[in-house]
Image 1 (cartoon, rainbow, N blue to C red):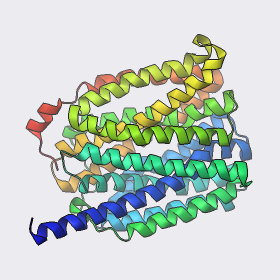
Image 2: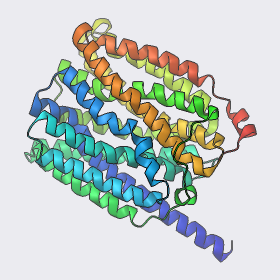
Image 3: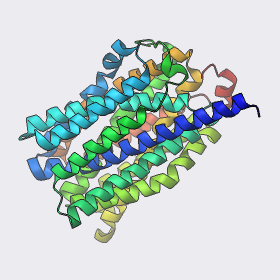
Length: 403
């Protein structure tokens, strides 16, 4: 191996280390902030399920606008965008802790946080592709997601120990989360733009070739938001789980994710996107059934453990969203289209994410919470049908025109 190859490998490994460090720190901060958000809104503002759905709609608005937020930045390197967006996350967390005397104010700061978070989400996906190869992409995504789970564990432990043993309030927790987020931004300074992250990107990409990729994103948007909001909300509102109890659950869930997500990543590489996304949809249908029927079909002492198990499994299965991006990387026509396609998919995903929690909140209030999950089971059926339309692993390898 010559010196040039050794140097290139060293520089690439160095970039991966800083990328992973930034990812870990960002996940720890998110573990603190988002891991306690439902309890924060319930304890401090005592909002109803319908109000929670409305707040979530506003919080998801930046995701729907993502394509418009990133389009004017198509000439700017993605590293610089990642730094700025990470700093914006810190501002949103600080505002929620300091400048939120009422529901309207806290909704505004959640919106600010969400702008940064959704931009970071897109750029991190793009960097994950840039720092990997087609044959190892699922593995790299698995490592990244596993590290994010580890960061979430750290954040949840901080909630648990801080509130149970040191008497922390939400403001102290969120000040700490803001500082950790700024450290994540500092880590990004040591990154360099890689491959497509440094080139001029297309602002918008709408092609028939990507329609299946976009449909997957739309269905995932409904599935994701119902479980992010109303999965924990069932435990908090119906079964009276406290913030420390939810933090412990998040720790266990993240620990399981550390072990399971790399396995799921290798499954993407081994079996292909069609198989793993079909498996995801079937699993989701089963989870929905338990969320809606657990208190009717199980003895009382098994209800909460079964819902915990559903929460943990569903949290790990969220990782399979990565299979959407690995699928895209195999069919994308040019490097300059990748980030635009990702941002377009996130925008479409979040258009439905904005509507889903508000509608689900109304359904909860009018018909009861089980119907929220019965409807999600129907969405999971459509996810399965859509996944079956993806070419097989062998077909994608034969037709591969991607990165």
